[in-house]
Image 1 (cartoon, one colour):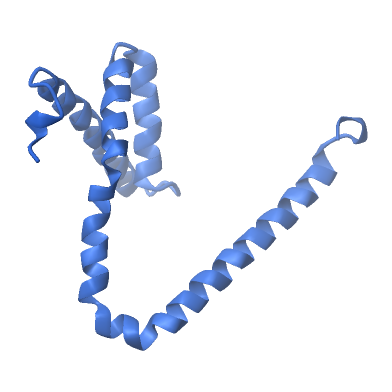
Image 2 (image 1 turned 90 degrees about the horizontal axis):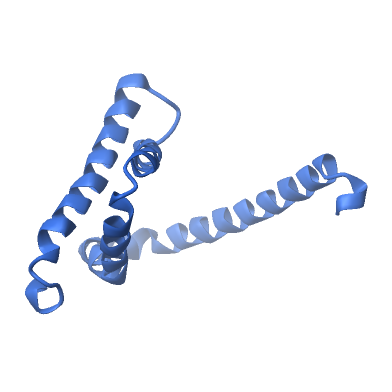
Length: 132
């Protein structure tokens, strides 16, 4: 399928500008992270830059909303490289797969338990009795 079948030709330049904005914020965030060694991932810094840009230039919001909606609708395309990587690593997965699955499940459960305990502690400590 060609893009022209799904997207009108006048939308393509607008789409490219919006994608450029997303990538520019991502790149700037990564650069700031590497230059300053801030304890935040570059993607988070880029997201803050994007929010700041959208606050300063509100005319970008509708375009970015349309483009991100289109990208989200076609998100499955982004998983193709990961699936190919899994297929390519078949021998490694057959050797260490059980350990990887066990570690993933255990760490997920541990994260859920710790999050729930911290939430309960913070709720009991910081929420007054009458507001609960």
